[in-house]
Every structure is written in structure tokens, then in C-alpha cells.
Image (tube, rainbow, N blue to C red; front, side, top):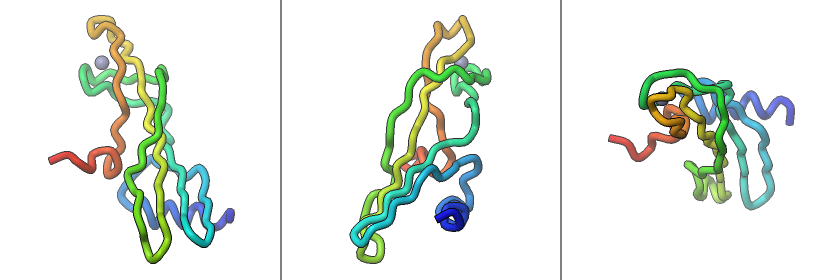
Length: 106
Ligand SMILES: [Zn+2]
């Protein structure tokens, strides 16, 4: 299992920087992969400021479907940060993970 995780990271996220695999559960019917962003903070899309003040987080499932007869589900923990810029009134924003959270963009 210790060898599997870095290999999966390379397979699943060749173009997604800063994402780490937390756990991989494989059984006969399904594959569950938990990932999260490894960066300590995120820049605010409103003002561009850097924030490390975590507000909350939730799970998204950007990949959930059958692959080769097994159900493959990717659990991505998306964090919300508090913007430290007082002129924005301490609003929160969700981190964007290139290649995973912008699937519906364009
Ligand atoms: Zn901001």
C-alpha cells in the first residue's frame, strides 16, 4: 500500500499540482480515493490576497462512476478560507484546484 499511493498520485493527477492522496481503499466492487490540496492556504479570487485562515471544508466527488467494472469514486476535500482583506468584509471563498474543481468551467 505504501508503494501504491505515490503511483496513484502520478496516475490520477499528472497535471494537478499540490494535490495529495490521503487514502486508497480498494475492494472487489469499488475503489475509493481520498485526496486534498496540500497547500497551506489559497489566494483570494476577489482581492488576490493570500489566506491561510480556514473557515470550513466539504467533500466533492469529481469522479464517481464505473471504470473497468468497478465503481471508482474520488473524494476531494475542498476548503473554504476567510479573506483577510477588511474591505471585503471577511467573506469566505472556496479553493480552486486546477483540473478538479473547474470541470464545469468554460
Ligand atoms: Zn479577498
